[in-house]
Image (tube, rainbow, N blue to C red):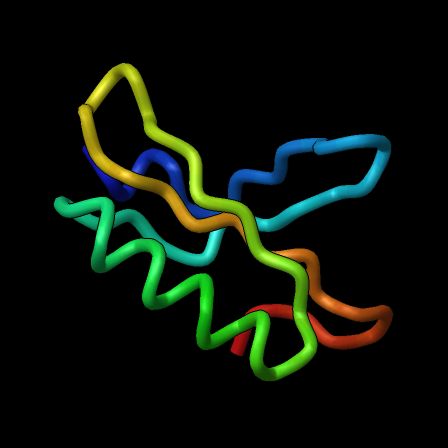
Length: 67
């Protein structure tokens, strides 16, 4: 089911965030988000109610998509 989330974008506060990955544990998701923030990319951790997984959304700076 996590695959269905791939390529998803969501808007937080008028900014588009791209889904980077889904994780089983909140701690795993938060450490991933922290890595993005350290790299200068804003990140959000959101619980997906459908699957119960934790999704990490990242706002990539212009011209830089998910690798």
